Length: 92
Image (cartoon, rainbow, N blue to C red):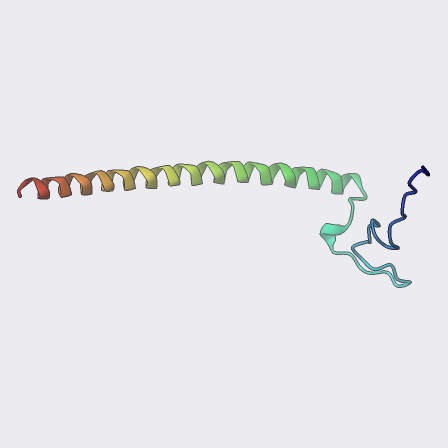
């Protein structure tokens, strides 16, 4: 019995195409796409990342507290509604 030969993949399959077309003209990049090139830019990026994380943590905690307050209020309203419905049916 002869060994099985591997079939090569079709051309272009399995290759990664660049996000930007490779042309003779240079495609301008947006400022956020450019890699930092100086120590100042690296420091600025690090500072902005830390500041963003702090704001996310702070807002996240505030949103969690607000959601919890709404949940408590809704549960109290539901309990009051159930109590009033129970008292309405007890008179029959």
